[in-house]
Image (cartoon, rainbow, N blue to C red; front, side, top):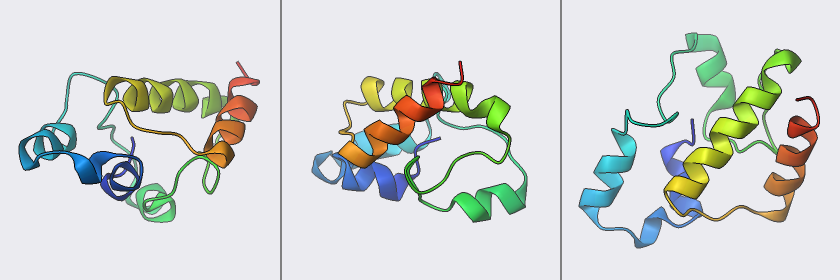
Length: 92
């Protein structure tokens, strides 16, 4: 859900190696989801202000999962990311 590089930029750089490994392998929340290779490559390490799921009907779910991961792991959110998440949540 939240790419490792995006997590690094929003607080994970200050984590211990153990915490980063737990984040990368977290299966308890909406962190790892199965997607096609094309979608995964298109998304890269982008945050919601730079990339949104191609199906607008999924934006609400995607934004809610993104926020859950950021909150659970106490990661920061940029102003641009926040605005994009608000727009996506408006589709709920």
